[in-house]
Image: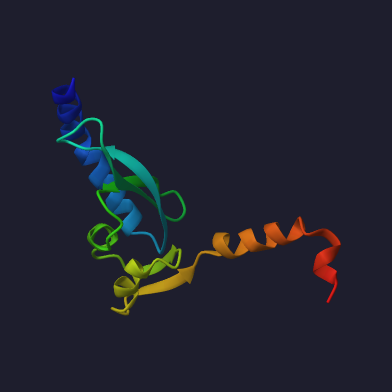
Length: 130
């Protein structure tokens, strides 16, 4: 079955590349990563950390997922090669080199700041006392 999956991945690669091209043609791209457990190739009982990255373009452009075996910056750097526009992402330091070239403008991710406001709501009256 592994060979079947590899052949299907090969067949779907043109679709993936088209989706990636459309995302990179967007004026704004949003990205974030999620940790996943990856099975060790040498020992099926062991797991290593991997990352699934989502990239979403603007307007009618689709989203696409990318996978890396670590959270190193080479994953986003490779995926976003050639992109010019706004990149909305969290404060992961790995994006800094993407912003340093001057062709990609940083747009902060408000989801992380918003979480603190939701946490503060549950504090009740304590928030109004000094």
